[in-house]
Amino acid sequence: MLITNIKAAIRNPIKSISLINRKYFQLFRTSKDEYSSYVHSWIYGKLKRKHFSEIFGDKQPDTLILKSPFSGTFKMSMTINEIVSVLGLVKHFGCEKILEIGTYDGGLTLNIAANTPESAQIYTMDLPEKVNDLSIKIASLNNNKSDFLKVGRQFKNTPFSNKITQIFADSGVFDFGSLPNNFDAIIIDGCHDYNYVKSDTENSLKIIRKGGIIIWHDYGLLKDVTKYIDKLSKSYNISVITGTRVAYLQV
Image (cartoon, rainbow, N blue to C red):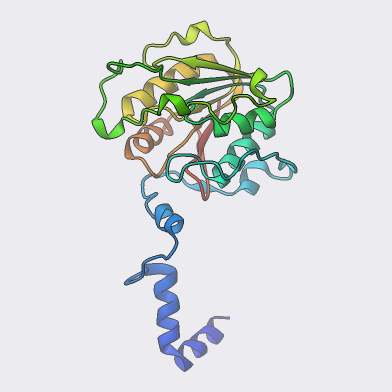
């Protein structure tokens, strides 16, 4: 194979150089696809990315239900691949009691509700309508407060809303002890400031069951999120799903 490739390169050196540049260097090239360019900005993080087969083995979920898969907001919502990844984790680990920190428009919440049994309990938390100051001081660039009128809009008035409990609170001061213990899964996608990610994670570790999973979004894209998860990975075995910003830990 090597000899064949060398011969081909000698016959057509310009094409060979172009292929090498496209595959390894990307010099003088700009993607024509906005999403592809966005993925190139996921530059942070030390953790190795894993394919589904490495995570699920031969027990991959064979059926997932996708609700309103194209209703997300580019660069704000999870991508379809990320939603599928989270749903795969939820189904693989048999999660029924789930907490989501950071509701946004409720797209992920809706899909989790659609892929869990009728007995599932899903709690989702976002800031109340009026917030003067966040309880933890953050850099202004990390203030990703959602439009209150859009919070949870995707799951409201759907057949799945009876499974979902909305919580309007600042997670930095919320009493997590007021929630049921032994959650099967907790998804952290609220404020992306380092101290908020740290606080949300530490609170989650107190109420997650043994064998449950904690999922973070925006690993690789946002420096504060990535920095905290990289630091935590020195004490816990955290994995990242390839092609996504989804990191997870089985406690």
